[in-house]
Amino acid sequence: MTPRQRAIFRFIFDWTCDRGYQPSYQEVMSQFGFSSPNAVRIHVKAMERKGWLHSSGNEMRCIRFLRTPAGRPFKGFVERN
Image (tube, rainbow, N blue to C red; front, side, top):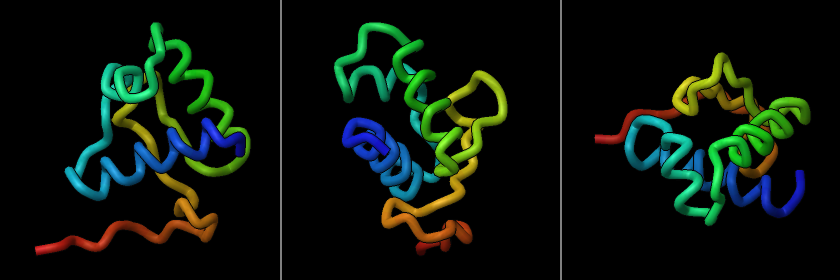
């Protein structure tokens, strides 16, 4: 992954861990200063091609993680109390 893709992946992963749901395209755009949701889609599709996640549809909140930020296979989130 490129450094920018790694930062975006980490942002999406951490957001999901902290809040229990994934950020919207608008939230990712705001975080990284993109002017278009298409910029986010391009990065998400690139990460999908590289095997880091799977995106089912055009929605940001339809991502399934395939790897952790460290590159290990993702086995799911553990619920915290």
